[in-house]
Length: 216
DNA sequence: AACGAGCTGCGAACTAAATT
DNA sequence: AATTTAGTTCGCAGCTCGTT
Image 1: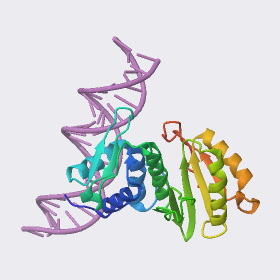
Image 2: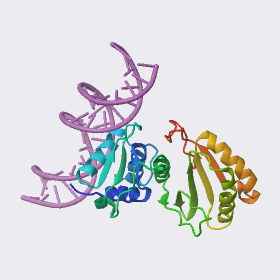
Image 3: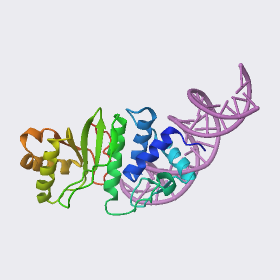
Image 4: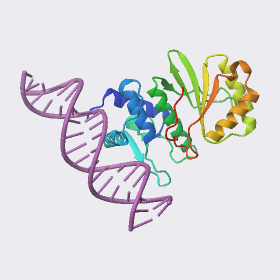
């Protein structure tokens, strides 16, 4: 078996997002084919890619009984580092981040992790999407945080919108999107407020709501 | 029992690159 | 130039499992 350029890019991407479900894999495969994509590849195609990588020992996969989709992560051989701890509380969230990330790739963005927190009171976003030198911070939020936390986070994001960030986008369930918007109205200065947007695209299981637009 | 979602095996048609 | 090998894409049939 030979590793194509796209295979390597897929493994790099999996290494950044740590794990993905088949929804994420479908979009990432389409995106990395030509650098952009309007549609994901078929699930059949995505399964074949995963099967090929698994046979080569570069990814592992499992289909947990409580989740109707297969999830995939890179092995040590595939990513050069130890595999992620699975089945943690944050798994649903990480899979949702991967789903969003893959859609950014499909729009021609580069995806990377946010910088590490500089202090315990600091806040790290779920990812950075960059295109043409414009950087957008991405948050995925499936459940609301303690309301007091939004004061801190939105304060920090407001400052960063004054600096290196062009925009902040929250990808949420519709309910969470309402809360985030409301709290942003309270805590983000007007100059920056219109550059922090929310999108209600996930259901409560953290699955992309079929037909939801990816508006960036 | 019937249905839908998701996964796999298989076959077919295609492209790209390496080999002869 | 022809052949071989690897990869890409899709649809269909058949499977399991959970829901109606």
